[in-house]
Length: 257
Image 1 (cartoon, rainbow, N blue to C red):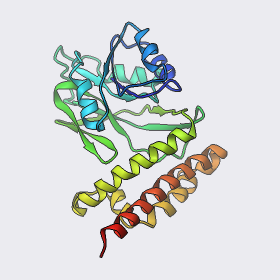
Image 2: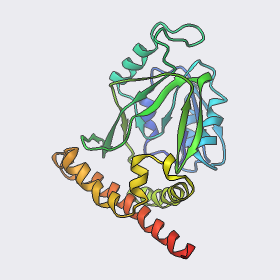
Image 3: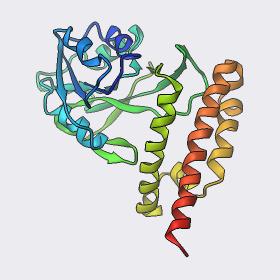
């Protein structure tokens, strides 16, 4: 299952990594760049065009069209390598007709390798994501600018990573960050501190995250060894956190004492 919106820069690579898939459900937010024409040419793909409101409902609308016991959920800039495809098959080997596994797992977390201009980095700070799961044991909820998968049952972990390989122009990334930061501000202001993750608690302190991210990416995660791509990623993360901090301060100022 995929989400798309004007993904011509990415969708071809994503579909190439899914050559083994027999059916793909795509929820599109109203692409205007030729993405829908490309998807229509693939007989495996069922496209649902749904105006975007937030990610939780968007993903759940896709789940309603899935007809198999297990779901692999991907953004349109994710890449599935041959090694990961083999790991997915191995994880589901021996599944019963209803999708039940001997080990009782109803989902699997998959780690990420972030790519800059097609080259995987060693320094990414993206957490592992539950991307493979039983259809009847999961649903999505909104979580800031993204979504959170609620899984009813034990979750396993795969070792092979997904590739996050977004090659859309930087201008599109900058446009997206402003929208994302606004949604994150709402989340951080409306959620009780006790319910926030450690990372989100640091974000509410404004100063720490923008200064810490370059150090974490370049030094602790070894991004300096990735050359200019490592610096590019570190600056991206610092920019995103700095924008969030500025918007938090602005929101505080307009709210008054």
